Image (tube, rainbow, N blue to C red; front, side):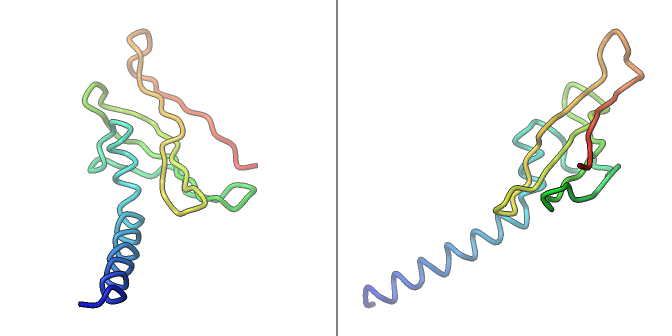
Length: 102
């Protein structure tokens, strides 16, 4: 095989890999933050002032049954958990998180 064919194949697989990672970035972002991607309930799904997409979700983790998380999409299209809040021992039945759509 010629070098140009090998370089072309590597380039094609890299592009396909990028799009696969991007399509699973929401679940991967939750896993990286220690949250459960199988237990997600979207509370708010919108765009901020700069047209960046964000979601406020209710999910869970190994330590907490209820976790509220603010997840935002970056300029490359990958989701990242920006903020989380879980119940405390002082107020176990109350979980709150704040966000603004500026």
